[in-house]
Length: 133
Image (cartoon, rainbow, N blue to C red):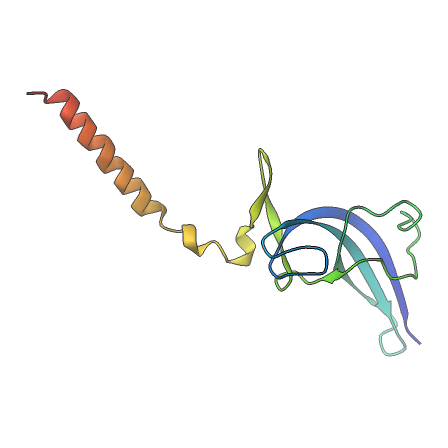
Protein backbone atom coordinates (compact mmCIF):
# COMPACT_ATOMS: atom_id res chain seq x y z
CA UNK A 1 0.00 0.00 0.00
CA UNK A 2 1.30 3.46 -0.77
CA UNK A 3 1.07 6.70 1.14
CA UNK A 4 0.50 10.08 -0.48
CA UNK A 5 0.84 13.29 1.55
CA UNK A 6 0.45 16.87 0.29
CA UNK A 7 2.12 19.78 2.07
CA UNK A 8 1.36 23.34 1.01
CA UNK A 9 4.55 25.31 0.21
CA UNK A 10 3.59 28.69 -1.27
CA UNK A 11 1.60 30.54 -3.89
CA UNK A 12 3.03 32.04 -7.09
CA UNK A 13 1.89 33.60 -10.37
CA UNK A 14 2.12 32.06 -13.80
CA UNK A 15 1.13 32.53 -17.42
CA UNK A 16 -1.26 30.03 -19.01
CA UNK A 17 0.15 28.29 -22.10
CA UNK A 18 -3.14 26.52 -22.93
CA UNK A 19 -6.84 27.11 -22.26
CA UNK A 20 -8.07 25.64 -18.98
CA UNK A 21 -11.37 25.33 -17.16
CA UNK A 22 -11.06 28.74 -15.45
CA UNK A 23 -8.54 30.62 -17.59
CA UNK A 24 -7.56 31.43 -21.18
CA UNK A 25 -4.21 31.08 -22.95
CA UNK A 26 -1.83 33.98 -22.17
CA UNK A 27 -3.67 35.04 -19.02
CA UNK A 28 -1.80 35.60 -15.72
CA UNK A 29 -3.05 32.99 -13.23
CA UNK A 30 -2.51 32.23 -9.51
CA UNK A 31 -0.77 28.92 -8.81
CA UNK A 32 -0.57 26.89 -5.60
CA UNK A 33 2.71 25.00 -5.07
CA UNK A 34 2.36 21.76 -3.08
CA UNK A 35 4.99 19.18 -2.13
CA UNK A 36 3.80 15.64 -2.79
CA UNK A 37 5.39 12.82 -0.76
CA UNK A 38 4.84 9.27 -2.02
CA UNK A 39 6.12 6.04 -0.48
CA UNK A 40 5.23 2.43 -1.18
CA UNK A 41 6.44 -1.08 -0.47
CA UNK A 42 8.84 -0.94 -3.40
CA UNK A 43 10.19 2.46 -2.34
CA UNK A 44 10.16 2.61 1.49
CA UNK A 45 12.24 5.82 1.62
CA UNK A 46 9.67 7.67 -0.43
CA UNK A 47 10.06 10.46 -2.94
CA UNK A 48 8.94 14.06 -3.06
CA UNK A 49 8.11 16.37 -5.93
CA UNK A 50 6.41 19.70 -6.44
CA UNK A 51 2.90 19.68 -7.89
CA UNK A 52 0.98 22.74 -9.08
CA UNK A 53 -2.71 23.53 -8.80
CA UNK A 54 -4.75 26.45 -10.13
CA UNK A 55 -6.01 28.86 -7.48
CA UNK A 56 -5.20 31.34 -4.76
CA UNK A 57 -3.64 30.38 -1.43
CA UNK A 58 -5.80 27.79 0.34
CA UNK A 59 -7.64 28.46 3.56
CA UNK A 60 -5.78 27.41 6.74
CA UNK A 61 -8.07 24.42 7.27
CA UNK A 62 -7.25 23.12 3.76
CA UNK A 63 -3.47 23.39 4.16
CA UNK A 64 -2.29 22.93 7.72
CA UNK A 65 1.31 24.11 7.94
CA UNK A 66 3.10 21.56 10.17
CA UNK A 67 1.31 18.25 9.44
CA UNK A 68 0.83 17.20 5.82
CA UNK A 69 -2.65 16.27 4.70
CA UNK A 70 -3.75 13.01 3.11
CA UNK A 71 -6.42 14.73 1.02
CA UNK A 72 -5.65 15.86 -2.49
CA UNK A 73 -5.76 19.67 -2.98
CA UNK A 74 -8.84 21.13 -4.61
CA UNK A 75 -8.52 22.66 -8.06
CA UNK A 76 -7.18 21.88 -11.50
CA UNK A 77 -3.71 20.30 -11.57
CA UNK A 78 -1.24 22.18 -13.81
CA UNK A 79 2.02 21.05 -15.39
CA UNK A 80 5.05 23.35 -15.54
CA UNK A 81 6.07 23.93 -19.17
CA UNK A 82 2.95 22.27 -20.61
CA UNK A 83 -0.07 24.09 -19.21
CA UNK A 84 1.68 27.10 -17.61
CA UNK A 85 5.02 28.84 -17.21
CA UNK A 86 6.19 30.87 -14.26
CA UNK A 87 5.55 34.59 -14.70
CA UNK A 88 8.34 37.14 -14.68
CA UNK A 89 8.19 39.63 -11.80
CA UNK A 90 8.53 43.30 -12.75
CA UNK A 91 8.52 46.54 -10.77
CA UNK A 92 4.91 47.17 -11.75
CA UNK A 93 3.66 43.67 -10.89
CA UNK A 94 3.55 40.38 -12.76
CA UNK A 95 4.37 40.36 -16.46
CA UNK A 96 1.99 38.57 -18.77
CA UNK A 97 4.95 37.09 -20.66
CA UNK A 98 6.61 33.88 -19.48
CA UNK A 99 9.97 33.90 -17.74
CA UNK A 100 13.23 33.14 -19.60
CA UNK A 101 13.17 29.47 -18.50
CA UNK A 102 10.41 28.61 -20.96
CA UNK A 103 12.38 29.63 -24.03
CA UNK A 104 9.44 31.46 -25.57
CA UNK A 105 11.08 34.90 -25.69
CA UNK A 106 12.77 34.39 -29.06
CA UNK A 107 10.59 37.02 -30.74
CA UNK A 108 12.33 39.75 -28.71
CA UNK A 109 15.92 38.61 -29.32
CA UNK A 110 16.79 41.31 -31.92
CA UNK A 111 18.16 43.73 -29.30
CA UNK A 112 21.32 44.46 -31.33
CA UNK A 113 19.28 45.53 -34.34
CA UNK A 114 17.16 47.89 -32.25
CA UNK A 115 20.31 49.31 -30.62
CA UNK A 116 22.00 49.98 -34.00
CA UNK A 117 18.88 51.61 -35.43
CA UNK A 118 18.64 53.86 -32.38
CA UNK A 119 22.32 54.77 -32.70
CA UNK A 120 21.86 55.64 -36.39
CA UNK A 121 18.88 57.90 -35.62
CA UNK A 122 20.74 59.67 -32.81
CA UNK A 123 23.79 60.08 -35.06
CA UNK A 124 21.68 61.54 -37.86
CA UNK A 125 20.14 64.19 -35.61
CA UNK A 126 23.51 64.97 -33.99
CA UNK A 127 25.02 65.49 -37.48
CA UNK A 128 22.13 67.80 -38.48
CA UNK A 129 22.49 69.79 -35.22
CA UNK A 130 26.26 70.39 -35.47
CA UNK A 131 26.49 70.93 -39.26
CA UNK A 132 23.60 73.32 -39.91
CA UNK A 133 23.87 75.08 -43.26
